[in-house]
Image (cartoon, rainbow, N blue to C red; front, top):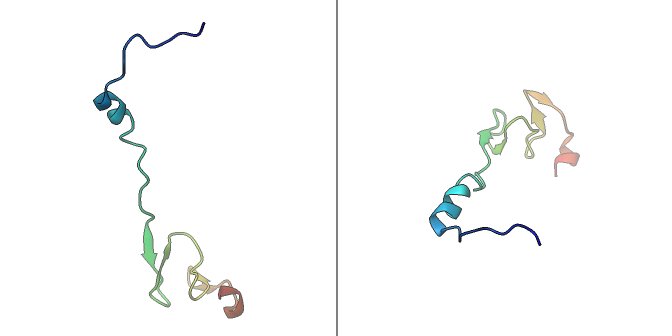
Length: 62
């Protein structure tokens, strides 16, 4: 027989344990070329540039 909890875990204790489990919103930055929002350290999906360089061709972006 496996070990069982001696007492019920209260709602407050349970919820305090889960306080850090919330999903945070992604941090978006503005592209210096087209001024659209994109994820930091990623290629801009609108213009295809990364750190001032054209990485993707215009056909690949769309």
